[in-house]
Length: 338
Image (cartoon, rainbow, N blue to C red):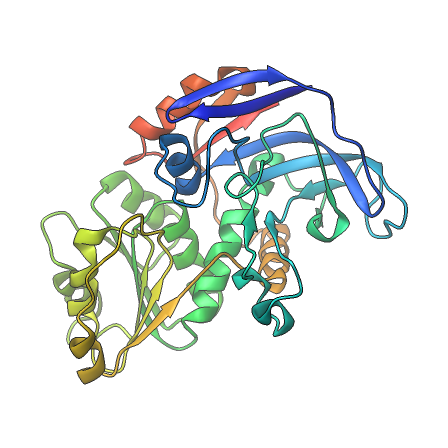
């Protein structure tokens, strides 16, 4: 079978290997689509501190079940599967208390272990939620990143609140959409990219703002006037923005950190303490978040038109990854077709 490998930073090759065996309790998938996100770009560039080369990339994937092992009860051959790619141990403290997304032995496919960049992939049934066959694959491939948005909105307890989302890429857009769907009073999303802000506007976000040349405090004032944001959700993860986020946070407000920081940030603890700010980490999603994302997609409540900004056959993996890196500032989603 064909398999993508990143042997070193900024290099992607196609290889051939034997297909995996379908074990007891497992589902063998023939992959149909994989999506590229910011984490994949970090991995490809060698900037993700949790991975080592060589690595088979990708954690966003849609496949068709072609074989099911013994004791599989909820998946049948032919089902369309949207892989839930965060593998948990179920034994550590967070897992035992229902926080499998924060597992101490956290294993994200394509980062800590080989991912979905293979023509065939065998995985435990637990991670194989199926989606309606009526849902187009180009929409289904976006369920996984939308689940991140659902989890972030829930972490921020956005219902009835004014929410500022920083960053309008795929994750930021989906966080903003999820916040609106989950009952936020007002949602603003900002980005330096006019194209991404326009996509937010098309998605129905109430307050899309181009932030180039503005501080985040100015953005918040433009969005909400004298009333501050109750919740700020950071979907960028950029060191130069962190102090701006802190300065834009009103007293007693909440900051949810979604963006992956690749370097440490100095933290003004006194400012957090004096303003009684709530800083919340946010990692991936729970099983319930993922199921909610599937439901909202199947109910056609998520705007995704135009989200796929580039697509390549899997054989053009080097060209596609190079494009994903160079076009990151303007791309929404790059996908590869098998």
